[in-house]
Image (cartoon, rainbow, N blue to C red; front, side, top):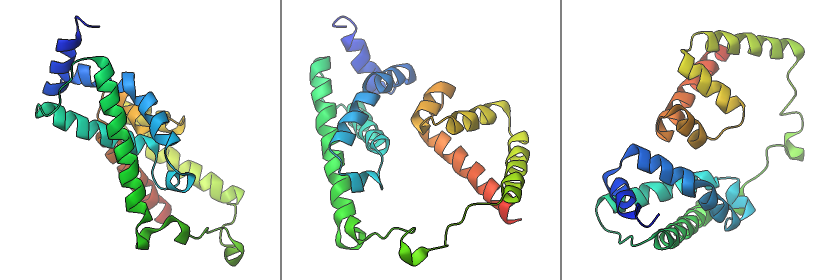
Length: 188
């Protein structure tokens, strides 16, 4: 790895897609575990560890591209990524603990005051939904169908992006568009 290190650093600084993907695969899960382990359970209800890590990637790659970081070895890189991750977790906690957004002000929708508000769908409603969903999926191209299938299998947006060789933001936008189209079909 020592012989490859200068090329890795240069790839990260230049935003080389192959280097960045390898970087994300190498550090992603470990950074997600680190973020999750430092997040209060109430904060996890609002922000996922994956979201924190995406922010870490953006900050790191922007600063690396601007040559603001000294990256002498992989150990130094890991320490830097840990520091950025923990800072991002603290920023999220501060943001969500501000007076108007306080986590302890949230109220569950399934409490005693909301009895009957959420009912199970009838078999007819389920059948109608399945038909609408299938008609939506039929209108998709092969790559979009693959993305939907991966999402239904429980993959994160980042995992989907890595598998289809796309950006996480593109996946998020596509899924939001599909969700909107499905909601339109359900309303119509």
